[in-house]
Length: 101
Image (cartoon, rainbow, N blue to C red):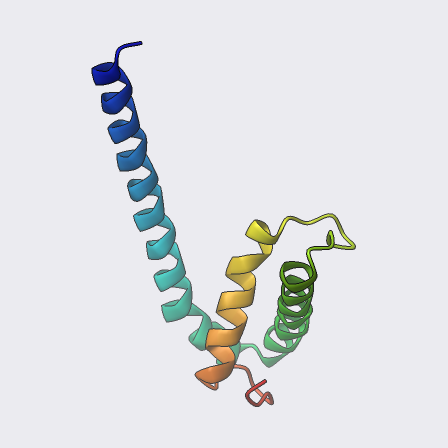
């Protein structure tokens, strides 16, 4: 493979990565727009989901801070979106009965 071909392939891969990043940012935006309405409309779901996502956020913090593997063998990359959504919605006051934390 020539340097030119390699550079073209790298440029194509970077473009694909950027496309995927934009897509995932869009999914995050949709969830941030939608979840507050769903949580207010179904307090039971909000309580169950909040508890589960709070635990995920705590596990994420632990494994990324300690470098130890997750007790459930879940990779941090799979946990990160739930952690981000949970914390964003806590700050926004979207979890019924929950305060910042």
